[in-house]
Amino acid sequence: MKPIFVAILFLALSACTTSVRPGPDAFESAEAGIVAAQKAGGDEFAPVEMRFAREKLASAQKGMDKEKYEVAMYLVEQSEINSELAIEKARAAKSRRRVAELRKSNDELENRLQETFGDEFE
Image 1 (cartoon, helix red, strand yellow):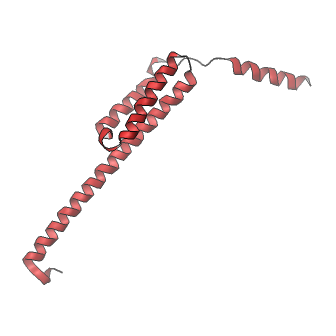
Image 2 (cartoon, helix red, strand yellow; image 1 turned 180 degrees about the vertical axis):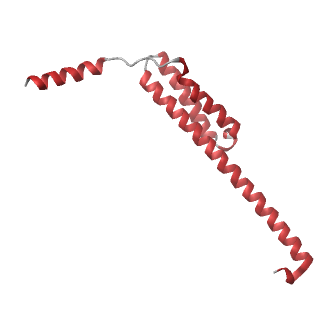
Image 3 (cartoon, one colour; image 1 turned 135 degrees about the vertical axis):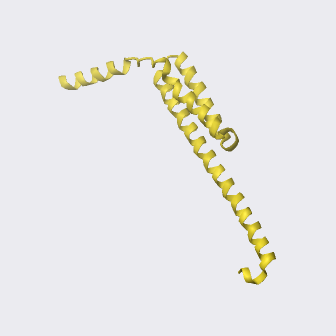
């Protein structure tokens, strides 16, 4: 009976402890992620993810003000994830755009060759 009481008491006391305030550099990686996503074209190609990244970072800053450090750090991580997703979506969209341009160029070249050489081209 005593070990159960000690375990319950330990759990209760550990639930009452406060988390340690993260250092001032805790937000730097999320802010850098947003800047990197902007440079990659995130605002153009992944506006939803960019908005989420900014909103989560702003919410994290509010959480820090309210001393909800664990929630704030979770939101910082979510902001970083949304920034990374925006970067990858922008890269994919740019690649799709380049593929479409190359296909169009190939089609134009094929048409010119067809006009020049006719059936011999095939």
